[in-house]
Structure formats: structure tokens, C-alpha cells
Image (cartoon, rainbow, N blue to C red; front, top):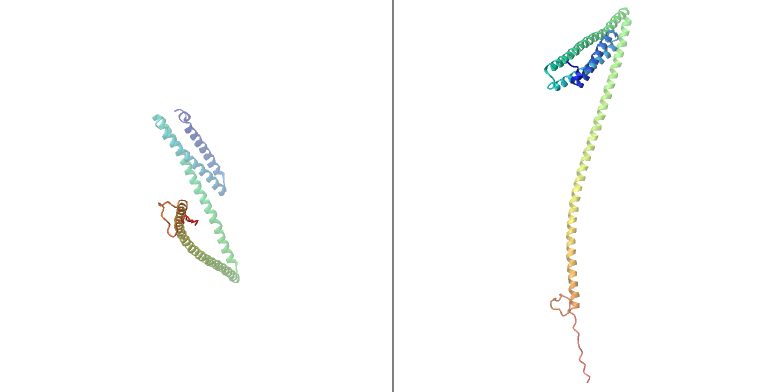
Length: 261
């Protein structure tokens, strides 16, 4: 079969990255065999686990790319690509099993480390107790009781402080609740006042509009009366214009008869 680069550049790139990770895993596990410190072993296992996660992601990308190219490749090429993918998965699974084995060994070592000092400490206490006299044992018991009493008093103090803090918090929450209730009531009052003010403004607006209409009618009447008066004064003999009630007609010019005798 031709090289992967002849089939797909992306497949060739992924295959190269997976090969690099496999080499790094092989070297890492060889290095892990030589490490004696449990903390360093744990860190090394974490690094190897991260590399295996990256390898798993790359194998998934390789499989996805193979499926996309399946329709363009021949049956033999697809078979070989699938076999290569299965080989990658198998090799990765071998490293996963190796990692689990080392992790189990590391956990056993940690259990031994934790169990060892405890047993020695217990034996040491037994030896110390056996070497003490009765009075020393009594004094030691009194000291331990005193320490226990002091620890209990400290615990009571902590509990009392916690209760006091809870009481203060409850009081503060109650005060805040009452303040919120007052704020809500004030907001309701403000909303009611705004609503009443809006109604009052609308009513005043209607009254102003009515007053303006009345003033306009009065102005029109006054202007009409003034116009009639002017016309009457200018043309008093015009009978088409009726006399205004309460307004005397213009005085007629009178001629004096003069008699010379």
C-alpha cells in the first residue's frame, strides 16, 4: 500500500502524532520503573495518563478521517487503514493496562506507608505504659482528662459563638425584611399618588379646554357686536341691519325753521 501521505495528508499527520505519543509512553513507563519515590511516581503516572487521553483523541480523529475517505478508497486500502486503527487501539489498551498496574502498586505502597507508623506508634505507647508506675499512670490520666475538658470547653465556646452569629444574622435578616416591607408600602403610596396626580392633570386639562372654548365664544360675540356697531355708525340708514337691543339709534339731523318776521 502506498504511504499515508499519498492517501491523505491529514491521516499522515495524525499517524505521526500518535507514533510520537507511543514512543513517549514507552519511554515514560521505562522511566517509571526506575523511580522509587511515590510522589514522583504519582506525578509521572498523571503525565502518562494525559498523554494517553491525547492519544485516544487522535485515534478518534484518525477513525473519523478514515470513514470520510472510505467512499474514495478501494476495499484493500480501507481494510489496511482499519487494521492500522485496530493496532493503534490495541497498543493504547496495553499502555492503559500497564498504567492501571502501576497505579495499583502505588496505592499498595501508600497503604503500607500509612499503616506502618501507626503500628509502631501503638507498640511504643504500650511499652511506655508498661514502664510507668501506677501514680504516673494516674497523673497521665488526669492530664488527659484535663486536656479533654479544655477541648470540650473550646468546643462549647465555638458552638456558643456560632449560635450568637446565627442569632445576629436572623435579627439582621428580620430588620432587612421589615425595611423591604416599608419600601414596598412606600412604593405603593407613591404609585397611588402618581395615579391621582395623573387624573387631576387630565381633569385640569379638560377644564382648561372648556374655559378656552367659552373665552373664544365670548370673543366672537364681542367682535360681532363691535362690528355691528361700527356698521351702524357708518351707515345709519341701512335697514338690513337690525338695531341692537339697548343701543339707541343715531340722532337725526334737525333743521331749524327761521322766521325773519
